[in-house]
Image 1 (cartoon, rainbow, N blue to C red):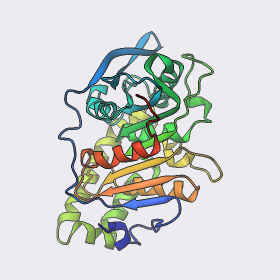
Image 2 (image 1 turned 90 degrees about the vertical axis):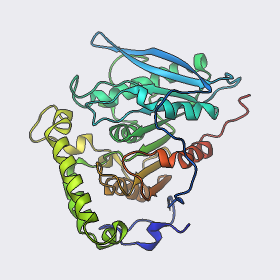
Image 3 (image 1 turned 30 degrees about the horizontal axis):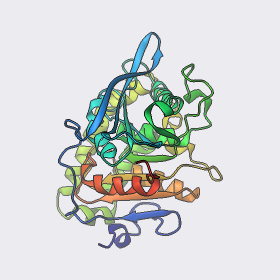
Length: 336
């Protein structure tokens, strides 16, 4: 099926790149997909409440899923990061995804990170990096290939996944203690509809609502205006709540500090990225993903972007494509 992007080259203020490192695709709506993004995992072994770090006297936990038949050789691991606007959500919401990858031979790890009500940024990305260091330091215990650890995050978790992939050399995001000397680098990022640039969030909404090609995409009539109202409402909710808390209540925060986009630099080496967004997402404007995809492509990164028609703020319709990407990027090397 021909890409929607190929039809609308002037989709936003900057043209989407249709060659080189970035690959843009539109998936037929009839593709098979799991029934749920969470639910009770099956066909894998679950190790619950694994303590990966202790911060300020409080344990940080993860749930690990492994294939029912434990791999005989080390296999890649995927770290799962839940959404919830940095102020809510829990790791169990990612168990369905973790189960999916473990059914296909991978180790999964659903991570609890501190929320903004407990600690402002950068506590969240520090916890993510602590979890990655723990898995790498304990790779032999869980049959993990320490050279192939990826992240898959949704919404706020997508933001953290992108941060994990872009800030390997930023010391302040590492946190203290907990497996010092062990790398927190990741070798693959799956960013599902994560915010990427806090400075332009509201601006993104206005540009989307007034873009002629986006009007064509959503259809004539009131559909785009209704979508614009949804974005404005949800942006107001987050501006009044978790985004303010995210930056420690600072009325004039340094938005670049917490924006993945600001860490993309020409000449730097980045892990492969898959960025996923739905055209019907009412919470995070899809231009946020476009910004990051374009920046990574300009920087020469290995980037694939999936814009999925009729998908909202939930990537379950894209599970088959995400799993295919993981298999391509992290092939299982004779694990059984």
